[in-house]
Length: 155
Image (cartoon, rainbow, N blue to C red; front, side, top):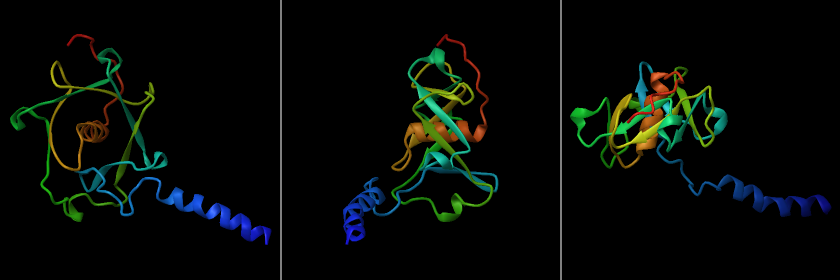
């Protein structure tokens, strides 16, 4: 009887853990096609082969990404309609790489400064229902394999 009571008392915790993210169905996972595989935002920390972080201080950044208002000015453009991309657009296979977004910068991983003006290593244009500018910047820097380096402090 004691085992049954323990099982019954832990069951709500197990169910809450399964649905803690608030989604019964998985949400669209931001991704871009890279060669024969894809680069995706990791849903769990252990999935990521590489990590990036963001900073509000340009002197701490190793990569600067500028959000531009015109497609012609961008190095990377992310535009989607109401429909999600077809399954073939971002294949999941052995070549798929995952990038994780962390809150704590690491000296071994890129630190991204995201801004609307100033000098930039990359320029992005994002108009999407499923991507944020942070997602696009993380995927672009992750796909480019940006090596960590301190950028000049001048804007």
